[in-house]
Image (tube, rainbow, N blue to C red; front, side):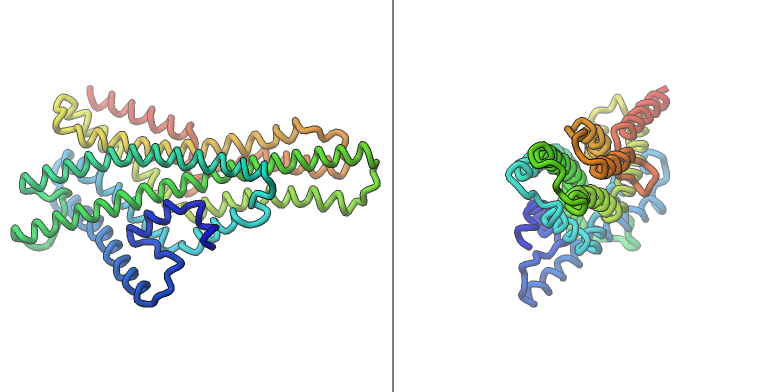
Length: 386
């Protein structure tokens, strides 16, 4: 099992640091109990910050500027709350997804397939590292802004509490918010990298499938040429059927990924849209006051990057799955038997419906959707400036 988890070792390590993924190798009852207490503290802290921010929007915010600034952080932390909850509640499903990739027929079976898998693993790691650097810059900006708020006698993030607090309680709350921000940022980055990785693993599986099918056709063509059609009908069906089952299994894997992370996609996509709308409004009103918008501007850029990660990875899956049928058509299969050609035509017919990751079956994760968001944000910014 340890080898199976190597696909997402760094993600799971980040989740472990945040208290939402207990290492599977821990067998000590005392260690499990300690980690459970730690998990309760982290989850309670995130939910507490989300709830008190929502109450601040309801009871305290009395103008559009307060609503714009408060709601931006609230919807972002609410999305992180959803991410943490999904990882905790669907721990077994996530492990099953990883096991699926490490078992037949998905597991690479020869040197060429291992090379394909390694290529995608390296690309995922490098992309995730780039994203982490961007996220770290945004988190650093938020941390500096939080420290400045504390020095001016304000909590890093506005919350509503049903009591007045002393100076000592103020610093306790400020420290608690800073610690919670660390957990929130780490959970957010780890969850996005995990979903991104699962998306692109679909592309890796499709490329392995194409390579496996291409070699199968070459072997069959060679055998037919030198041995004639001596093979039985059952042998033909068995070999092609394995490829058909593998192709259908890839579609099943992608569907499972969408189901497991459906709530994350929904809250991230629609929460980010709301954040972008409110941020664009605030930026349009304070465009000349650079000191007032610098941190929000960095935050808005990070929001665009978050949506782009999901949309770009989803778009790559759409293109790869749609091109699989064309790749099969270009293979050297005219010399195959009639039954084998029919089987390949079934695969190509299935490729007519590409794999798509959706946000609650409403919005498709694609660059077209991302372009629509950019156009809407730009139009809103121009409209609000007038």
